[in-house]
Length: 194
Image (cartoon, rainbow, N blue to C red):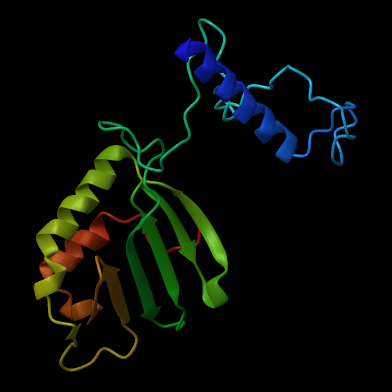
């Protein structure tokens, strides 16, 4: 008997809650129920929280697509040879007083520039010549070379060379070139425009 009374009391509380929530007995959903009307016996279950949106999965056999991280995978090397500047040598003076600049890149490509940086010619060192140049540059030890070597007495129609490599710049008159810089010049293609 007690169980029946408890069930009846629970139903009455539920019915009162539905009425207070503004559900009309006429099914209109708004305003108070008319006098003498009874609320419908159906109860709407509480609303469940929205389910998480499922992440789409690729079709079977298709690898998932991942965004690049900007860091190459371990063991991956550069895809193209280095075009970083390896050496810049400028020759100035001489009888005609012309300036020529030779630019050599890490991949062996080179460009000879004339006055006003006009490109005169270019090419690529063969691998053995490029290795000779790299060896001469290592042997020269630019960090410990004098920054300027001048001939005594000066040679007025001679050439002056300026070398820029690995963050260092050194210059020398042609008759006062240290042997290490002479070896660097021997590995280069030359300063003639033809």
